[in-house]
Length: 300
Image (cartoon, rainbow, N blue to C red):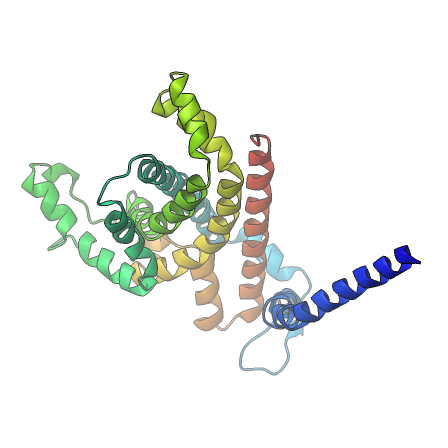
């Protein structure tokens, strides 16, 4: 009898918990799942915003993607940003988080605030700021290079195909570093100080303690942050690139998101734009899956 009462109470608790999830789940389905399903359906149509219904064309939009050189160029640019922004952002974030965690400087709190400020700025503001920094005529970057006798390194940063993607990477990293530094710092703060004290007694140096204690202790946090960064980076990169370059010289900085926007709202081709969106969705999901699968081997 007692086991039946326990089972009944257990299911009542589950039902009560599910009741609280219904509103959130409903909003998620309405504003996330449904738009994706609708975009997937539209990708099979030749659909203009000036018509009530589109013409079903099957896989023609996806066949068109394969032959579209702009899509392939944008795809490679997305991979470039994803690779370099992730590596640089996480290296810098973990490095400074470890310093703040292990070294109790008086200025630590002030420095954390300074690092975090770019993350709370509007992406549009950041884009405009860095556009001025990169300006070939009066930008601080070229002026600084000229001041130290490195005129040969000055560039039209947002106008040269060879350097434009690197120029876009810098503000993306600048936006992200502060947030992930605070995230990793919080994770490192939860590691018991007794472990470090024992390692110090055994003669371990700071580098040894970092790779043997700190990094393994926060590895799950790093994996979660990687997934979040990959998903959010596409949103940041669209706004930044659209404001700073609009696709760059001869589409040198074109991304899948900027090309999708152009296709839908300038060319009025919603069907093809939705197909590009589906490719972007698959790219994001595959990137998260591969990263989480690859890093799973390093657990423990």
